[in-house]
Image 1 (cartoon, rainbow, N blue to C red):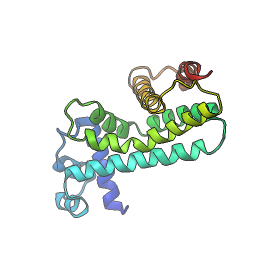
Image 2 (cartoon, helix red, strand yellow):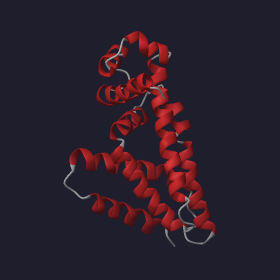
Image 3 (cartoon, rainbow, N blue to C red):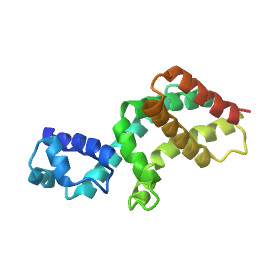
Length: 190
């Protein structure tokens, strides 16, 4: 990504995070990026195009990180613990991106719902595969639905991270991670 496109991208994340997709204008993104509005249209077709690229790039970055993390061990319980830590760290590091993503995930009538649901598939697939291997190795309960666990994990961690970062910044990250891991792992381990 060239410098101007990156400035647009970063500015758009910040503006979308603070105002939401619907309330953001291309003029506001241009102003935040300190570039002419026409420059935005040179790099992106529309505000929708900017938004979709933000979501695609963010989820790709997140999925690539999870995949790399999972490959550090073959133990499904350790993989799941690492996924929790990795997810938490990612959500903490990229808070504005997560605000943008979750605002559209959780909006009842978002026209992005179908796109964002498709884009979360790599994340769901990685976790579902870990759960499946854990069931095959008799580490996790056989009655578990892999996709349901993956979706619940995403919701659980994202909500906990936002709660922690916005309303409970004095609580330690270690305490929050330990609590999430205890609740999840004790609930699915045999």
